[in-house]
Image 1: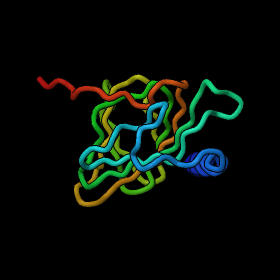
Image 2 (image 1 turned 180 degrees about the vertical axis):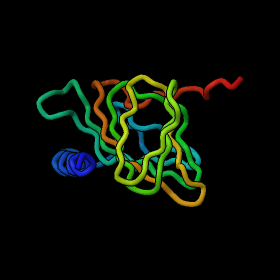
Image 3 (image 1 turned 135 degrees about the vertical axis):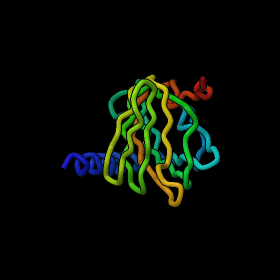
Image 4 (image 1 turned 90 degrees about the vertical axis):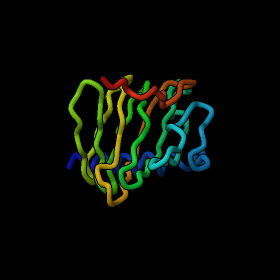
Length: 152
């Protein structure tokens, strides 16, 4: 039931807000900062970026991330809140300080703000996709890229 509610929230928010602001070009950073630029095996697509209704201090973003087989995001973190819904395949979230967790279609995850992490396609034979909804302060990026984690 929770997944149905989250999916409906994505749909209603995207439909209502998409009428106000045209979508940005595929993978193009916006004025307020959008998902990380495309990397091998990982492609973000911004669907919507707009101020929240009634305030100019917070920006709502809706985007998808497509993962090729075995693809992954670079190490990064988010200053605001993000909620992701797996829509194709399965995705493993490797959040600093926690064991990796794998999410299947119709499951959601919420990376903690300002916590370094990597998301990767759990499959080496098929694609994966997540839909992401985020809220950040105006003028701040939605994603902060980080150097790879040190290995011992």
